[in-house]
Image 1 (cartoon, rainbow, N blue to C red):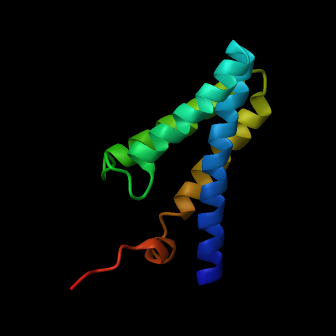
Image 2 (image 1 turned 45 degrees about the vertical axis):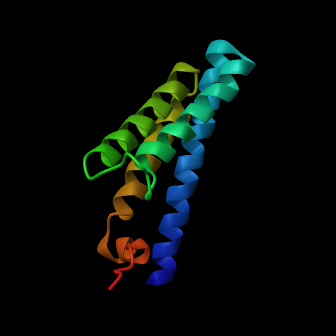
Length: 116
């Protein structure tokens, strides 16, 4: 069961990378090379600050809201860039993978150790 949980966590990481790539696709479509670089950097910075497991400004409300915004906007960006099938696929993949990551057996794999 632990192997399945680690597979889910690997897919969650892949999902985060795909969101940054989608931002780059949107940036290239909308503003050219400069925005194609800046958009993924912005996604990574927002993720690091608000949505990562050790995010400085994350929390029980902020983290899920930022995740929904990042994956929703990444999908919308793909749609706007002319890739509707990829947009829907990313959105469905994001929902499924992040729902699986909420299973207790998966969450237990990354639980913070209790210090005495």
